[in-house]
Image (cartoon, rainbow, N blue to C red):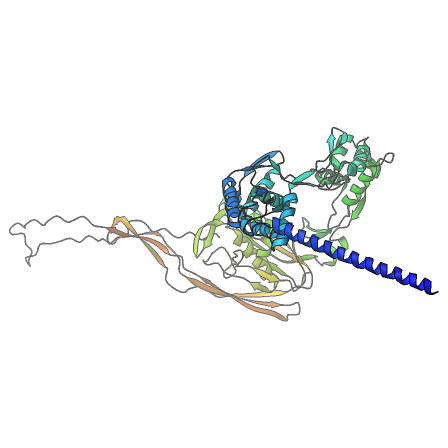
Length: 632
């Protein structure tokens, strides 16, 4: 046992010794390697002030240069090419741009500083960095700047020139055949990517081959495959005629006419339909053939003066949307090519029963005035009478002359005729209209209806009832009355050769109207309008037209119902301005009198004064002409 223990201890000592020897060798080798690494790092460290060999900035070799030298070299290279253009291409077009044009510049100082940091550091580490640079190189890219507004402006110009919208596939009709035309994709300049490419390219020192700008395609909304179904429908529609049917009547629509009714797909649509201007015009003509307007019940005055109701009649109206749908169904069908027209009954607005319930059975009031004058005045009287003829006034409603006739314009056919303007008789558009308003006023006056608006003429007009004239002027002067009878009123006008009659029809209420007219009195002298006449001697006056004085009157109307109850007590005052006399006043100097000759002896009078004669100088030189009555 002891021998075995001795052998085991001897072997343990041997192993321990071997490990110490190995450890010493490892430490020695590590020290040797560290010393070698240090020596290598120091050997290749070079100068801290110089850039490492193999260093490039923007692909320019600046190894071995100081930072300032490298910046000068790079800046000089940049200045040498800043005005040299580079060609860019897009859409088959070429465009030349330069760095100076777009304000492109690089931060060379920052780039050199970055390159120096990549090959710098403490001596041993710097050596290894520079050793790596010898084999693999160090390249620093500068930060590039540009004038953004200039870049955007130039690229906008290029984009406008090269960009184009896509053209959708479409259906075209050639004769009675329909074909599908392929679309074309569009293109546009990718301005974000193009801006980056242009700036980076202009920052380089080389000016080599043209550079293609990036283009993007724009997708189509409709391609050929999307239109195949519509093309099939259109071909079916044009394959043969279709027929329309209504109440035993047949219409044939030939193929060429069907073609005008079809609207092929447009603006991204992919369907074909019976619509559009051609279809609208055809349906309009078809409606004129089939439709019949309803007839409202109307009131007619018989030859004996009675009023009767002409019955209403229903009409027929073509249902355009439903008929268009039926035509489309027949057109797009292979075997069912007959369309039934959709027609509905059109009821009148005023039926016979409605008209009878309105209570228009007889004359409530009537008034007639006579008129004459120029052709323009006769035209205006007839025209405005037609505008108010047939007016219906509901119970409690108000008749307005201006609202009923509207503005009197040339477009409506009104002509110039004598009219009172600012108190003077002149020619104006619509002269003669007041003849009608005065006649309507007097019809309402005689009927006992409440009159809510009336204005007398500025000048007195003798052929109207005294104090019962009514002038109008659109839109400020109106003539209005209210229907208080409890039933509808109908206004009818009858224009004769020289007279105008206005009748109010309704349910007679048998009112009694009493009128009292005050005398027409002069309220001042005749105004005079003088003008100088250089042909008339001083002191002489010539009256060309005698005027009229201002006047006034008043009319009182008492209205009683059928039971003699007083309903209304109204008084209308009328104030008329004077119409001036037109007088010419002489301003011509009279001829000078010749000098008096000496009297002969013995010819003096008793008082020693020779006799003289007197010639009047204020006698009128022209006769007086009476004024002509106004005809508004």
